[in-house]
Image (cartoon, rainbow, N blue to C red):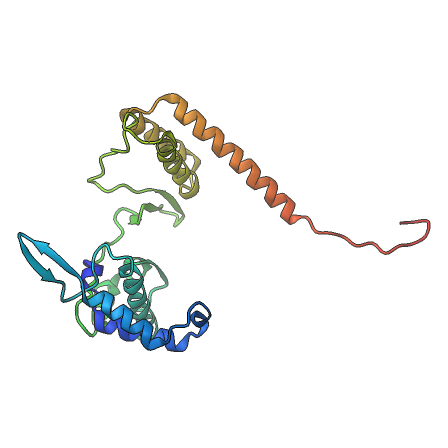
Length: 261
């Protein structure tokens, strides 16, 4: 999607949210507010965004405000509405075989000949005409989705690697900066855990770990930080394995038989 937050139509989104609130009653257990109260508050938040620029005060007249905690929720609900509309109304020859969405990033498997037609169909679902989709095709058996690179070989098998944008610079929190040591260790932990959880091939995982260590060493991280984090990860993995084994155990009840039990 192109600039999702600032292109999310407020009036249409409010209609979608009102419909959801009226159909789903579970939220009423969390508050004494009525539907009209929630909608009035939400409309006030979305239509009173002011900012100053070169001494002039402006009001945002369209779209949800960037940085507002309510904008992601509104945009996601509106995207769900368009998604449900697409899957329910698209002709059979256009319906994707796979559709995975995270906010406005979508991974889909469709017929090569229907990519343009499906994109046009999706762009026509928004009555306001503000939500527009672009697409990238698989190139040389590879396509990125968020920070995952999906790689397909000639046999049709798929493996996952880490994806970095061409503009990525491998610049992370410098170890000499005035931050808590735990914050710095969390940088190492996050990158290594991403490697462990996303990459499916062991050789690719070794290459990724080596890449991470090289990049962080350039940011001043000493060797002991990697050893410490890896030890912590091993301990946590061992504890998780033990808990899993304990959960898999089931009690057995034996009846009392004199002389036997």
